[in-house]
Image 1 (tube, rainbow, N blue to C red):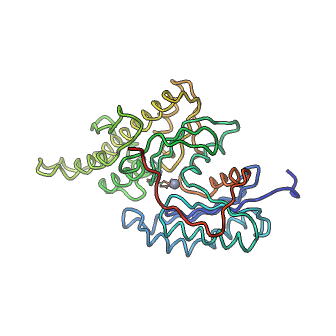
Image 2: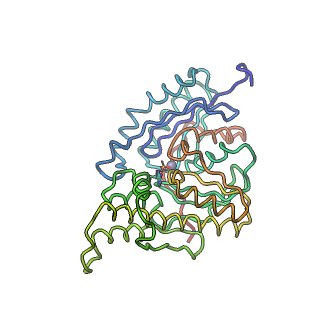
Image 3: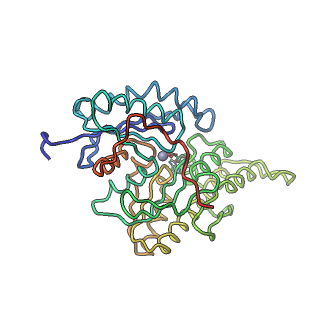
Length: 345
Ligand code: KG4
Ligand code: ZN
């Protein structure tokens, strides 16, 4: 592509607690990828506080967009389109990104393209592959979602399983809080688990042998009981650093068993030859290892999101190019859709 016909997309992401902007060219090359994380702000609450998140987005959104252009060595006038996540997420957070995106699209007179955050997590896998990876089973596993899709093409997704209660990442975050580990809990549990024995304590594998839906809230409570004791039961054993590590390892192994088991069932049932896995929890090394073992055994191809695109970012907003190329442009009065996709009952 010569610089004369290069086309650039500015993608904006603010659905939860990361303010992010990226510049991606039409060849899907990421020219810049800037993420301002709010972890420090939310840490003392042990989770994301929506009002705190939207106020931080307001402070960060313009500097983050400026930085994305600066790193890409481009100007606003070089942008051919603006992509923005409008669903799902926290309503106040989504509105900050959408307002910035609408303003830019109007000022620059370029198309506005809406992005579904969950589909973008799976698109991060597509970006890492240098071949067509569809049709595929796709698992998005993060703080807000645990969703299993049958993806017929890059834009056609059928929801075939979802969590009935907590998302897997949420369970990591809450289990970590019970263990006295810091937020976000996933990386903290992964670190602690390295020094733990996964067989020291046997945690339940919720719904492992039942369909394609998930449930993680019982597992999170099981960790809490290990530390506080069951209501009306005997007092728990004394806490030690080793016990924290053992519980972390046992909990992680239980979550990984369930996630890998459901993926295995889905690829078998749907006879798919590719498995795509994205979202924050997909950064987990144990999960990545166990998924690759399972896929080798099933003789299918595993396409993991690159680690840098697992947790929330705007580079995965490159999926906006797919919409744009299909003529899916949003009107400037488009609204956010905060609600999550729900499991079928
Ligand atoms: O995709 P993401 O940034 O935000 C949502 O869309 O929800 O995912 C954040 C989640 C948090 O719950 C965090 O604890 C989890 O991903 N996470 C991990 C790891 N890194 C982040 N969970 C397990 N292991 C990790 N290494
Ligand atoms: Zn996410």
